[in-house]
Image 1 (cartoon, rainbow, N blue to C red):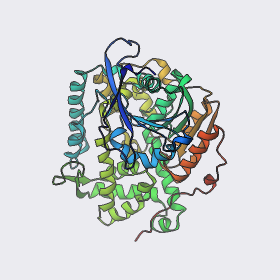
Image 2: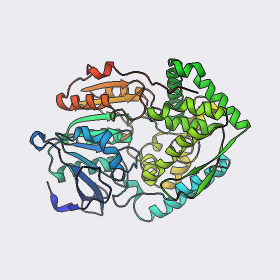
Image 3: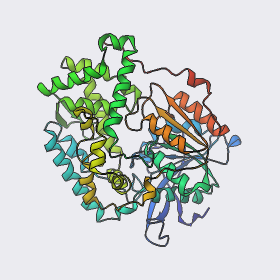
Length: 476
């Protein structure tokens, strides 16, 4: 490839134990429509195939979620579950997308986490005002540094193809998880020549109204969890109707809140932030727990404890959710959404998509870009407006495997099924008892490996018939 803009550097992050990736930096245009103009820097790492004698010419590039999720910072945790199984006979490439992590500029909002942690014991209105102030401060700083309208999926997809060419690969395989699927679909649309195959795990359709999706997505996932509990002997003996127990527990907490505290274990462990736990907090934490089956199976335990005034499991799940803020470039998240999601939504559409249930509808409350507050946030963000193609389905005949998890609250299986229907050479698989991101599992590894090998329908892979619904730990 053209190596003039590519520089091999030391790795600026902790590499996974036992690996020795080659790290580097690639200069790309800030605006691919102006290739001679200002540039930005993408940081990447190449993990060469561990079995050199079996190495295939088509690597896998990992497209992370968010938008804004840090890849390089987290690769020491991501490598084993998400990437290692692909790395025997293929190079694996990871990178921080434009606006993210170690790439420059990174659209970080360090103002946000303190505003969140310092307002866990106050009314929503007060907390949301503090968070909005933090976001406005962040925006003022970032907008002074760069053009936020250029941090979107179309520009990022051009980065992906530029990286492929610079590394000298004629084609590669895309593995996208969550928002990474939207980025993968954009690469398929705009730069198909360099793509051998695609794995879409927990899919975001380009045409989806993401601003309006959370209440109904949350309700569907909560009910799937409740059905799993009803089918489980241990769980159903304590909670014949888990969904109803969630509502009852939330109402009890509104009448009589519990008090606890949070320690940011990734920052100063000596500082403890007081927290007041009310009903909606239980819904928020359950929503975030449904992303991960290992957390989702603890929701009945959490409710059982909260009914007895014990906050331990709630505190653990809540902390895991808060810690995510360390690993996402929030300015990128908002820039992408304000550019290519929010312009195609409207307050009317968001209202029309509500469930009519206050608890589920409130999952989307507050500042940010996923819910009614999106229009206020984007009004001052100046992220530009994407062209209409950024709200239209992608059609392609590139071989594609589409994976979904039964309990996923944010990218429900129906969205994956819909995208698979728009791709003429695709296989759709739904995994029971699984949340958001299904490829990092034993059976996920098996079907992805088989797909990359054959580029054909892998729905008969043996492990699929052995997948079972979520099971729950014994209660009391």
